[in-house]
Length: 115
Image (cartoon, rainbow, N blue to C red):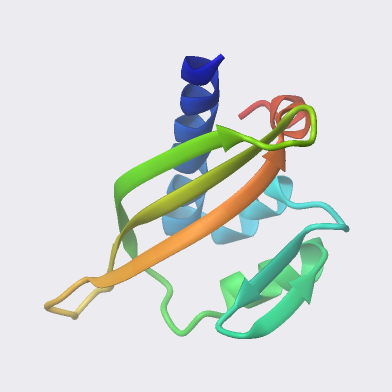
């Protein structure tokens, strides 16, 4: 079970950051109307609000370099929590920015979206 959780977490992270770096509008397939995102203190809910925020960030291009992916099941059946850390390289910047993100998903939702 632990290997499956780790595999699902890593596959999701790879897919998520590939879309973030290359096609942010396509990330809408990863969110639902009940999805929530807090970004630098701003609380967002729903596909439209989240994708609007992500596509209006002050940079069009970036490259995520993932350092760690830690995944574990939640106490709710079928849930998975994924913690990601790494760096973000922006064009024209000499030094990458450090980032971390925590995501919580239900495995059935991930599989139904073919990740």
